[in-house]
Image (cartoon, rainbow, N blue to C red; front, side):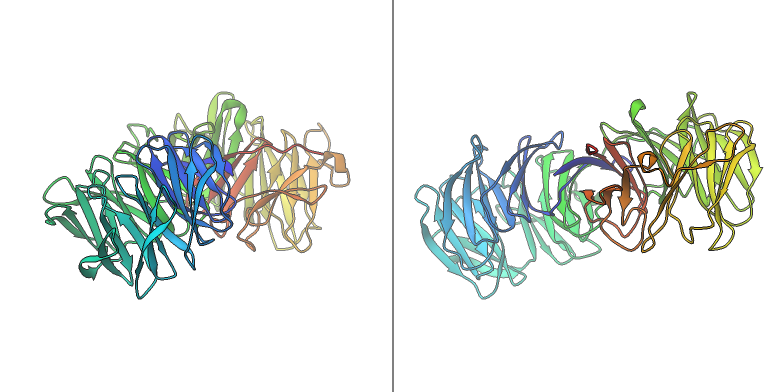
Amino acid sequence: MVKGVSARWGKCFRTVWFSRYPRGLTCWKDTIAVGMQSGSIAILNAVTGIQIATLSGHTHYVGSLAFLPDGTSLVSGSGDKTIKLWDMQTGGVVKTFRGHMHHVVSVSISADYTTIASGSLDKTICLWNIQTGECHHIIKQKNFVNYVCFSPLDPKHIMSISDKKTWQWNTCGQQTAPEYDGSCISFSLDGTLFAVCNGPTVEVQNSVPREIMAKFHTAQGVECCCFSPDNRVIALATGRIVYVWDITGSDPHLLETFIGHARSILSLVFSSPSSLISTSVDYSVKFWEINTLPTDPILADQKPIPLVSAPVKSITLQAKDGIAISSHSDGVVKIWDVSTGLCKASFQTPVKDPHQIDTRVTDGRLISVWCTDEKTSIWDTEKGELLGTVNTPRGKVIDLRISWDGSKVFCMYQISPCFPYIQARSMWTREIVGEVELISLSSADPLLIIDDQRVWVHSLPPNEKIMGWDFGILDSSPVNLSDTSQNRPHLDFAGGIRSWRTFLPGIQDTVTRRVVFQLPERLARCSDAQWDGQYLVVGYDSGEVLILECNYVLH
């Protein structure tokens, strides 16, 4: 597991990434249990997102989890056809329940702690005695059992979903009411409310007597849902999007829309009335903040910025200052705290749709530089002051970067496919201080600036090549460093981050060619990435920023 954070305008305040995608999810107070595709169970702190334990024992995915009401034990259902009871103090398996002939996809515990109900793809619901481990009743259905749950108010009342219908049973295995349409169901924590989702239609009912308290419709079919602990809102997942509805009044209304997952959401759970957690096939567990002000303090004299961020054009990592800076295609610049992942500030520059834009704090000032068709502009982003412009050379601007010390601006231009070149200008005088023509590179990735003076260019596969120049020698042309392996950067972004040909970006050692860290599958192409050996910051075409803390020792 790699711990990281991701934010979209303060809504998603933390993301935990895994090498395999998480499936089942449950929460008890400040403890989260996440069932993994690999068969392990990750135990996370619900406040910090930090993994505090790993439970190992299943040999296939863990698709469903449930805490006992006192939090001392955990029940898991797995694709290995078993159910396990775990001791949360020791992390050991107390009991294994065997009997299903196919994957166990759902588990639930009765309110009196005596019975476990399990639903399986073998078309049965098994009722297990927790103390003895014996299955005392088997309920057969005509199709796969997708979901099963006990009523929190009645330990003998069970509900299940099979073949897009909702069924009701008692612990003797008898059907207690006619089935009705419903593809997703959920009880509130105290059992007083009950939700039935039939495609895009959602009904919230009193558990006793079954009166409809609220009814509304979503844009798509609901795949999972849950109530907040205070029963004020209900969260619904449809595909990659989470909708949060306020159900306190006679007229339910949409309160929040959470967009951030790259692939389908598998499960939802509230950790507090204002915190929602979701798992997804995109390998992430996201923590969402409900009904709060955005964490990005926008200057009072600026116009509000849309909730959906524009693609990230560049990332600047200044870990010694504890920040990362993202520059976006709509001219928005954001400052992120690398320790928390929260956006500390957001600014709107006057440029719209720049070819390239980069931002860095230098000499105590937040400086943005961008290229358009006609000119390159240098801008004091906090003061909103233009510091200077120069004419943009003819040809396509491939990339633009500010040096680490802020003294130079490096631009890569491409007059034709066979003749890209790099031009360095002084930040303050705007004079050209160096230029290199890249005759041997027919195609090049964006610049990778290693320090204040050295620039490295990476050509794309299959003719992958690394070339570098030192622009720091006075009264001299830039010195070629490509033949000096000890000066070459040891770490490179391999595939996905700096290439559009793969979905799995990673970090590779340029000497050994070994991939030392693999990012989880998310989007087709990352816009930019920077890594200083401790923090990895990645900007995406979705506008999201991913911050990971990961260390690698060079050998």
